[in-house]
Amino acid sequence: MNILLLGNGGREHAFAWKLCQSPLCSKLYIAPGNAGTAACGENVALSPEDFPALAAFALQNQIELVVVGPEAPLVEGVFDYFSATPELRSIPVIGPSKEGAKLEGSKAYAKAFMQEFGIPTAAYREFTAAQLDEGLAYLAALPPPYVLKADGLAAGKGVLICASLEEAQEELRAMLGGKFGSASATVVIEQFLSGIEFSVFVLTDGKNWRLLPEAKDYKRIGEGDTGLNTGGMGAISPVPFADDALMEKVRRRIIEPTIRGIQSRGFSYHGFIFFGLIRVEGEPYVIEYNCRMGDPETEVVFPRIQSDLLELLLAVPSGKLAEADLKIDPRTAATIFLVSGGYPEAYEKGKPVTGLEAVEHSITFHAGTNLKDEQIVTNGGRVLALTSFGDDIPDALVRSLKNAEKIHFEGKYYRRDIGFDLV
Ligand code: AMP
Ligand code: GLY
Image 1 (spheres, rainbow, N blue to C red):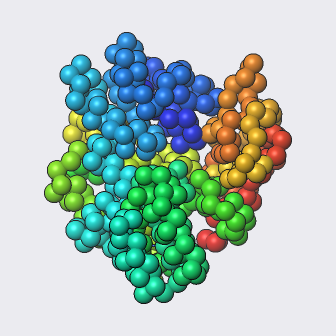
Image 2 (cartoon, helix red, strand yellow):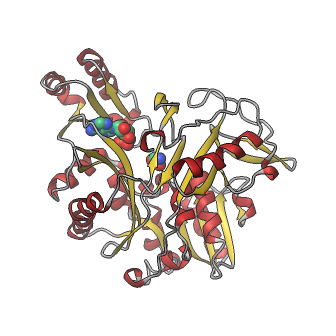
């Protein structure tokens, strides 16, 4: 069958790598893809948010399945666009409806959903510009640190943790004053939770759901989890502290009530739910929902899936998710990101990448890469992810680190301590 995959990051290379291994996949197109996805299928120069262009392409190329990597097209309603257009209706889209994607696209929506369905999360209130004074007073009554979240999508920058009340109040004024444009027209202020974070993923048809391997990502630029937040500098799976007892609580208190909430609200959800969780004194709480897979988590989660991912995805629209095959590799996977010098602040692009052919015993996932005159060049902050298997975290990590040394581009930087807090 012909498949259209939307996106261009490391996550999408991991999707493409896994999908093209399926005997059911005859042709894979990636819109727009990167230098890595080009080895798994054909890149097409289309924006994931240009729905009419995607629709025309899907019809011309007999696409039978659309798989959505990033959140933006989901929040914009790509699922609804396909299901509302008669000639596209028969093409299943893996991803939630626009209403379902609000679980990620609106923090206030997600918090109200969790409250309604009794899902453990930090206490919160939401404020608009008209309620600035109430917001300032709410902050003054909270203990530090302060958590402020822009309601809408803000390119991963919309969450601020402020150490002092003065800073938090100043930020609230700035956010409600338009710091993140319309994304911060509403601001969620919530209780700070102190604990250890981890990521849990399910694939659901809105009724049945299947648990995928859990992961932990490392968001800070510096070793020892220091410095600025990034899109993610590496990840590991499985997570040693996500034992049976904790995962049973996650199922009962978080996953099952979320699925019940989706049914109760009555919206369509045919895709992934990424639960960003935190363990506080042994109990799991939801920090955020995402309506897609994580990046770099996908780069460790999908290599651990031994069964056919395409068969699993097709079981969503066909209503066979409950009985679909899902085999998980028990070994540990670790991935480390090689990033451009300067990232997550300003960095240069277009640097030639060499040494890729020397990589051994790791999978190279491309993220910010491009092909220019037959040469792979950097095209983003996060350039390449190196995923390796091992008996434990250090064993897997050492393989990725050996390969990280063999790849060269000007300004290359990576963390050597992914998983450091878990061993
Ligand atoms: P989010 O974009 O919602 O994932 O938030 C980004 C990061 O901010 C999370 O990964 C957490 O590290 C942190 N964070 C968000 N909410 C809270 C909270 N209530 N308490 C502590 N840390 C938080
Ligand atoms: N790694 C976090 C995310 O994908 O949002």
